[in-house]
Length: 395
Ligand code: NDP
Ligand code: MG
Image (cartoon, rainbow, N blue to C red; front, side):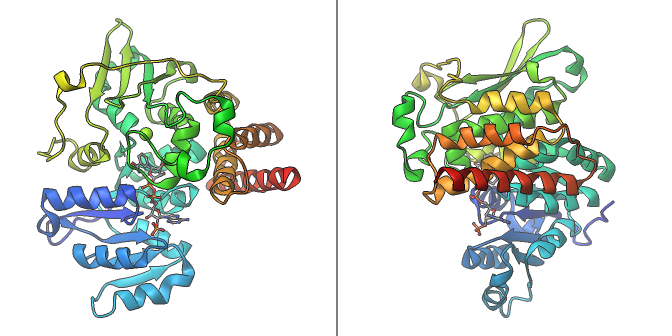
């Protein structure tokens, strides 16, 4: 268990501080009291060394880490004279996660966030989880690590944060269904022919949320919602058939829980991640946050549509991964990350992403289970290799 801070301030470490989640977190922390209230044992970034160093200086961080081992000297130079310790590469990232902290914000994108978040979980820190890949790829191992460490798991993904807010702990047995809302992304009303030709820039232009590049493109393909279905299964212990997805273009209802008496509880708010981040940081209290208040007369209407699974096959792939179990979540995510990176680099088409994931999942459907975290990394690597081979063959 972590020892308490001698300064009496609350300790919050931030993985992925330079990203969209990280910057929103620092904004909320600064609003809630900044350095008077918070100590920052560790923060991490990757390529944006200038911003990482600036954030480290502003927060008085103890340890600043870039995930890129080749950028160590740059980071050290940027921190010169500050007294802040610099680190680089995968082991420093894990060390950043393991540093004594009360709360860890898991805001690294992709499977790269798993090892340092697991290190934080093992140390007993509470985890504010934005990195959905931890649960998609290593769900049971990750929740077991949290339970063993004794910390709380606080969902930051807006849908799961919404469910967390309206899921009455004493009524868990009466939960009938989890209803995840989805904006439908920029291609909600496009044909498959139109989607076949889109560029990464077009796919990244989310209609409602301002987020990092990869999650924005995942929202356009609805792979983001696919990952969130698997995330919900692990977070809330429901069966795959209890998870529904509904397209709600305004992104005002962030998700809902349906109970056995027919009641549905929803959480609403403006589409701004600082709501969920502020909630996770302040839990179990509610803070006073200077965020937009909903004006229902101006909103006037909220729309809902069933998702079109022909144009968005990612949702069915999530269901298949949950039904197959074992390492299929890690395979789905690894293949998706490889195909997404190829799409961003202009090496594959937008619609190919789902085709590649489906083929890789079928090829690696051998019933293998995750006995330890190394099995997850091996499945991730194999999925990436298989995806790369498929893309090479079709090039
Ligand atoms: P961004 O791309 O904006 O930021 C990612 C962060 O991770 C940056 O600090 C980046 O460093 C760092 N990073 C990138 N690659 C690596 C790597 N290989 N190893 C270690 N660090 C790395 O992402 P988001 O903030 O949008 O998303 C972060 C996570 O939160 C994702 O898992 C996403 O799905 C989830 N999430 C995000 C939401 C959002 O609103 N953005 C909403 C819900 C969930 P640098 O920039 O310095 O290169
Ligand atoms: Mg989400």
